Length: 543
Image 1 (spheres, rainbow, N blue to C red):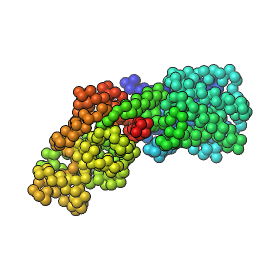
Image 2 (cartoon, one colour; image 1 turned 45 degrees about the vertical axis):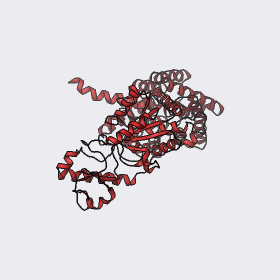
Image 3 (cartoon, rainbow, N blue to C red; image 1 turned 135 degrees about the vertical axis):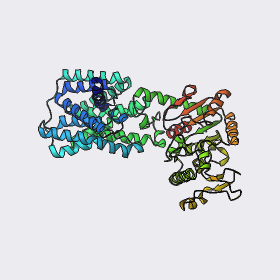
């Protein structure tokens, strides 16, 4: 009983410690605790304010039922912790300051949540933006106090060692990148004024970490990019202080966001030495893991480059890039609220009504969708004569809409473009049925044999067309590499293709956001969104 009462409190404290660690991209409770200890050595009052704000913000995120996976990673405590650090450094220690601190910590989760909703879908990191917004608002209320007393050189040295130990226990690459940021900051401070060292280091260190190891995989190219970025952030911080503007970590935020946005433009990235890539935000985490994923992407590029002919199997993860929802278990259709089997459809008028209603809803989504970059990249591979075929589980026709010939797309689960009679197989253009469905007619019959018409996608309990499977097998055997894009491989017969590849000695690569049952048999697996990975692999492959 006592343990059950302590567990929620322990989770909150742990999440708050992780949130404090996120100030320096350290997703570790131990690392966050050591970073807090380092702050306390230099400025105990500031450390206390940051710790209280971080804990309160984490509690609010929990009480507001934000996703547990997010607040436990410290993503909601981070902004409040950063605000607490700013508050301790800028504002006079008073009751009013504490009231503003508590208010800011209470609203920080909502502002963070809003920032993530607006920016994350566009692959733009929010970073310190919520904390900066809160601090600038607080400055209008509290003003700025006189600079706090400086810590001694001994205190600074001890704090540096403790902070570096916290980072090193979490990630050696993160610690190495932080060291690069410290070195650049000290050089800039020496060249300008020693009094500017805190604000310069506050910007050069996180900038170097973000661009050398966290948001960009560690490499010689990313270290060079981080050096340029850290110098730019430090110089911008110096200029803002000279203008009397409270720079805080705004230069870091601006430089990193600008760099990440530019790196996501392939034409820009390819102009840079080493072509450093920006990681998808969903895969950002411990730098060592990000580096492993980047090496996997390089291995995929090598496989595609060396293959004379590539067969590609695509799933719902390819369609989500075009704005269509991914509802697993419905063959990529994305509109089935429940599994309606073929026998349900034939035997129940209510099931037919629900089936056509859901299909109409999906068609409305499909009308607003357009081929994504991954569809166009596959077209480019086809134009080079390197693609034997695309075998797809999707039924949306986006591969053809991107310019692929019908003959080179094998739709093993059908296509929504035409309805089909379940008795004679006659196909009827799907658009002809929508007005009748809108008028409430859900019992649609074949004009030739009066059999029931159904949508063009394969239903649960319905047999996949063996002719399509034969085409898929022939396309696979005509290739020397199978690339799987955006499917969890939990549904046959698509998953059978990997078994066929193994039996034929054909290597396969898997690119999917989540693990699959076949990962251990793959030549390489890349846990990522499919678009940027495939684009790089094809762009770096000779024509």
